Length: 204
Image (tube, rainbow, N blue to C red; front, top):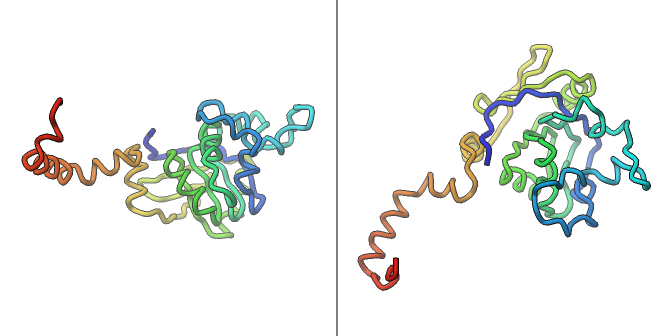
């Protein structure tokens, strides 16, 4: 995964509460199982009319948010089914960080596994950041310092589990994380096993 350290960007305003994974990635596109190119299906029912015409009032269709790496979402973002294509699609759009007052638990875990930082804020903070997003004011999310900086100079901290922070900062996936933590123990186990059960290593 690409390491996440610090991102400064305009933020896509997506303040509706209870946006579920079927809205983020509609079920009719689940036959697409590769990560690349899924961004075109994100929020499809909201982004396009029935004839495929883009709704130019929808944030993801507006030119100013084309390169946005941050989204400010409403409460309970990513609730619903454990649809891994939802974070895949958001990542394919270039989003690196999602900010909300709460997230669907499985969705947040899947985001982390795909290098997307989910940031929990208070309702008052969410309202301020959503206003910044709507005003096209840049936001800076710094994972090293665990801070969100607004264009008006305001800075607030945010919580993140230390092991998630370490993995994201280093760009570690699950295998890389295990190796970073337990490589010595793994090597010692393999040494003992090789001595006790050499037949397992025949043909190396």
